[in-house]
Structure formats: structure tokens, C-alpha cells
Image (cartoon, rainbow, N blue to C red; front, side, top):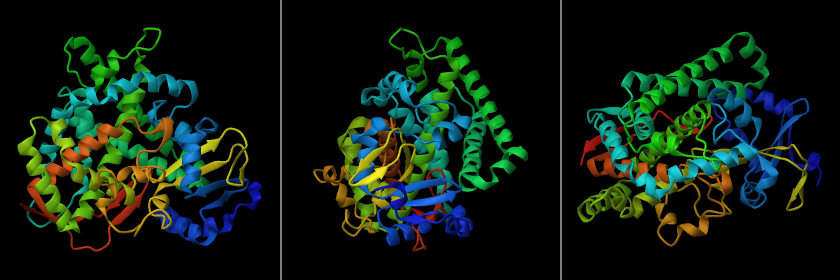
Length: 443
């Protein structure tokens, strides 16, 4: 099969739908998948195209089985990197391998266990802000919760609220700017000429200066907090050297961007689904109460909450935070008769794979039992909430521990409900919730 023989969507149709794509590209892509099959080519400009796929086997092949021939696209390695630097998420090749090997031990389960008390304290503080009178949008609460969790896990108590607020503002502003660049590539000249990109790059430089000050305070204090910052400062390459300051700041910015964004989204969607399923709430409340009585530590508590974990996994199936994963093949390749010329831009739709009717029974229905103990493993070849292969998210355990603690604490204390049938979505760099209005009553 040649590149031209992929089912194709014309550039004219892309531009004709550009306004709707800017708001939410998922219906446009779903229509193309339904009409053209599991893999198609979208022409986005003269000589420019993207191959979209919801073929789970193809995704697993590119991300895992033949991952050496696939690299991340310039969306992350250039466009995102100009805002957050060359950290784990945005780097490639030998630099990525060197950084992954260096940082991996900091995210080992034994190391994360030391952070659970800090994570739990941040969770309980933010959940305490929930108003039980009337209706509230829960996303800002989970957004603050996730950001506070990352910041406190990195810097313990050595960072002020004004600094946290500024770092959060800059992180989110840079993402919004990047979305405009990606969704409206034809306005790139205007973003450059009008100074928008320069302004946001300047904001991220401000964030870097804040972080450098925090790191310097830690080094000068001589006090160990045994948090993520200490783990990163302790890390040594094979030659015995530590990370240089600029690289350390890159990695911290990546943790802010990836660590809070995806978690706040997943927590909100989980709450949305639970608000429509009182029975699932009761099961979580019962499980959390029992686990609290029968365990002495937070890690034991997490292990004693398998149903809560299943609920979160099912939520990330229906609403995967990383709803697209991008790759570019280094050399010509072939998969199941499809010829993929080198340099092809590939976008794998996790949103579509996770709802593919050939893979999932009642794919649009919320069924946590799919991921019950002994059952979850059978989905591993077509379930990618944290990616797959060597580049699977390094913080997956951190995120799961945080979410199990957060959902357990939330449902143990509150009954939640929503008057809306539909769950709103706002696809940006990650899949974000929209207008998550619900009611909370003390249990």
C-alpha cells in the first residue's frame, strides 16, 4: 500500500470544518473513522498530512513492538519544548534515555511511599473547600488539588501560595497558547508577528526563575525533606555527576505540566461518572470505610481499595487524559499491509481505541467491573491511559496513588449528584472536562 492509497480527507474539508475543529475536533475525527475505517489520512495543508488511527494493534506496534523506529513529533519536541524545555516528555534519543534512567528511581514505589502523607494532606486541604450549598463546578477544585499535590511533593512546605498561584497560571497559559498554535497552523505568522508566542515564552522564563530560587533555597538550607526535589538533586549519572540546573528546571516544568493536568482531568471525569451512579459511590464509600479501619498506613489503604482503582481505570478508558498520542516513523515501515513512508505524522486516537466496539462490550457504558482483579490484564493490548512501551508515563504510579486517595476521601465524605445527562468535554492538549457542575451533600 502506498501513502496515497490511505483513505483520505481533503484539505478543503479540513478548512471547511476548521471552526468546529478548533472547538472540539473529536466529532470530526469520529465521523471520518466511521466513514473511512480505522486508519485514514487528513490533508492539513499543501504537502502536509497526518495519518489518524484507532487501530489498537497499530498503536501497540508503534509504541511498543517497533518503538525504536518511531519518535515523538515536533508537537512535543519543538512546539511544547519551547515552553517547558527538554525534559522527559519532550526529549528524544540518547538524551531521553539518559534522563529516564536517571529519574526512574525517584518514581519507584518505595520512594513514592515516602510522599503519601504529603499527598494526602494536600488532598484533604483542597477537598475541604467543597461547598455543600447549591451547585459548584468541581474542576477548579480538582485542578488546584492536583497542582498542590505536585508542588508539595516536589518542594514540601518551602513554597508560598503566591508562588504556587503564579506557577499554575503560567503553566496553564502556555498550554492555551500552544493549543491555538496547533489548531490554527495557518495563523502561525500572526502569532509570531503579534508577539503572542514571545509573551508566553517570557512567562515560562519567569516560571524558571521562580523555580531556580526555590532550588537554591533548598541547596543553601542544608535541610533534607526527602521529597521529589531531594530525590532529583540526589540523582547521579553513570559518571557520578548530578543534573545541571537548567536540566533540573526542565524536568520540574514537565512534572508541573504533565503531573497536574492529566490528574485533574481524570479526577473530574471520575466524579462526573460517579455523580450519575449512586451505587458505585456506595461501593467506594463502603470500601474506603473498611480500608480505613483495617489498615494502618496509606499504602496499605490504597492496596485495600481495588474497586476504587477499577472506577478510576474505567473513567480513564472513557475519558483518557492523553486522548491522542503522536509519533513519526524514522524509516519506511509496514504494518498489516499498510506502507508507512518515513517521516509520516501519526496520531493514535486513544479516545477512539478505548471506545472501539470491536474491543469493548457496550463501549460507551460506565462499567468499572471491566477492571476488577483478575480481569484487567485482558485489556492490556488496547488500553493505554498512560501510553505504552518504554515511553509510558513515568508518573503513572504517582497518579494512581493520588487519585485513589482523592476519590476515596471524596466519596467517603460526600454524596455527589448532577442534574445534567451529558458530560461536557473540552479537548485541548489533554482531554479536559467542561462545565462540571454538580451537587455535594455530606454523607
